[in-house]
Image (cartoon, rainbow, N blue to C red):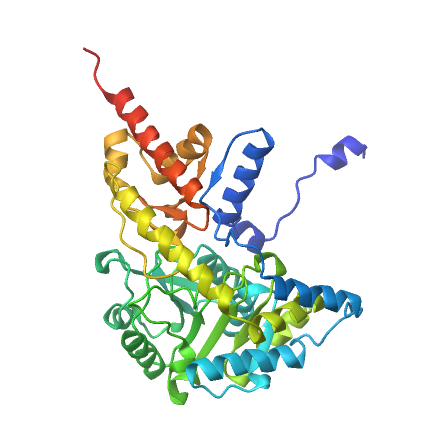
Amino acid sequence: MSSTAISTIAFPSSIRAQKTHLSSTAAVVMAADKLRAQGVNVIDLGVGEPDFPTPEHIKNAARQALDENFTKYTASSGIMPLRKAICDYTNSNFGSDYAPEQCCVTVGGKQGIFAAVMALINPGDEVLLENPCWVSYPEIVNFAEGKNVLIDTEATDFHLTADLVKAAITPKSKLIIINSPSNPTGRVVDPAEYKKIVGICVERGLWVISDECYLQFVYPPFQVNSAAMLPPELRSRVMICGSLSKTYAMTGWRVGFALGPKDWVTEVLKIQSQSATMAASIAQKAALAALTGSQEPVQEMLAEYRRRAEWFIPALNEIPGVECGQPEGAFYAFPNLKGLMRNCGFATSKELADELLHKYGVVGTDGAAFGAEGYLRLSYANSMEALRESVIRIGQMVADASARRRPAI
């Protein structure tokens, strides 16, 4: 066989790989990077990443780890001081009683969620997801050969309620994933409603993953609410999947954790030990400094996100055809663009997002990727200057599209 023939043989992708799609948010990042390489002035409102540097005391801890040659393998579950710090941080803030054997340090929050789902879900098991939801949840469930059951929340202005959850449960339901504050909507589940949701799930034999990636980014008068605040009988079926990525501007460090029932955590650890092995040793030392050091940078970021949201959301609502609710947490605007699409002739929100990116240099993530056609996720984890310019460019897109549709005189 010639070398040419060998090179043309199609790769025999597994069925699992064929059913798995590239993350829509990752695809947006790649598209933006490509335009930047071409010299395009891109405003990136697509990536869910703090625009702040990692705080200095955290970076200093990593430097010290390097100087001390802390560059070897650690236990797959993470170093004991970090596991203890995660438990202490959670227990002191939320009145829980987690112990280190209930904690596994993971390679970012996504790794924790992935392993928690893999450890629980068998083929055909139903997993309840609020819709819209983070793009990776349905893909992770598909990878585990589970069945996604989407709970539509558009009618409740994207607030997940106990009544909605109760109506979605069937005899095949095994797990629900709750994300508060929510990516992409910025909605926060009220603590009392959260307790009712988990109570119903536990009563019906479901398990719960509480994705608390944006936990500390909640705007008053709304309250920070962790599953750790639940009574022990409810927490016994809940896995908290946390992350240091957003809270401490450590997205590239890849440190998260799974915190929950010991038996479930043990299964998560087994899966991590055979895949990622462990979080990077240096990053674990940095994470320890993040949790035990000053929390002032977190409050500074929260105050700045709130300031941006208070300008950005009203500015978006001034654009004809845009309707955007005020987020209660995280750092995302999730405007309804259905009116704009009708006015400007866009058939889908993806078509609109592509036009905005390629002609006007503004990166947003198509709402359909999260399960909400006609919406667009815009991250305001960017400078006020960039946000102001993005509103100008979106307005220009609307003006140009309207002009194209205006009949000639």
